[in-house]
Length: 398
Image (cartoon, rainbow, N blue to C red; front, side, top):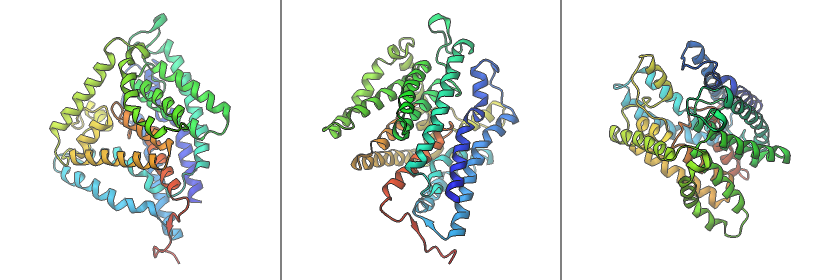
């Protein structure tokens, strides 16, 4: 019953993606040209948070009812301990709103703990079809925006709007969703027509978004797909940094942006990162400052905030230098483990999130934040297929 209910919640949240991102969609299509922030928008954004909290409550109630203690819960004390230090240290310097915003920002990183063994290949197959539907809808919105979106990002051929973001706030957020959609559909969709159409829509979407990071990620994924069955795959995968740098050098040409645009974009984000590095300590005293929600509240003069439009800068300011180093070590560990297990899918996941974290706060853009929990849970499930995923003796129910 728990697993079925969790599946329903996840699929329902995915189907509500256009609703959750309604403010971004209205702005991009020109219906609402301003960045309005109202109680209605906060309530709409709350849909995703309610869904995440519902999964957590279902998980806890399932343990109390069945007496089964999943191994994923071994991560919980460790995660709470890690999160507790910056929260406790930051209380005096920030406020309740900052702490709550920070907890909301961090929740997708820990949600996998509460998914137990519910994310298997069969369910990911169902997810792939929902993702395909959202990708198709997003591409449709991008095409509409070519004609109707105000030219915030300049013009393209035939005086059409440039860098159309679909149902997302920015082109780089849109391209991150497109690339992750490409990965999910290509890996889990069983129907050949869905996979092929998904690939075509992904290429169209990234081209329309004119995102340098999106173009780099898409070409990198295609490179990995080509070499995955080659004899010298392990050696060829080491060439990925060279592939990334090569595409980056021609990113402006490939995306049809002005010469030097990609360099300006990366230098701006580098500036945010360095500002965060200089302003934080080993453990942050400003937990919740570099969060999208606090940025929106700051626009209304409710609270103070720090500028960070990328996950790495956001993580550094919210958690501190020590935690940032631990994050990098953890990502490298997962990537190496996935490579040893020859799990090309998870290698792709690490590369995508690793690259997009330079330009997107991935824990705050839906549904990319939900995908984090699904991917980690699926990886754990796959690595425990031959073992018992539960420890039954938890002393709750006989």
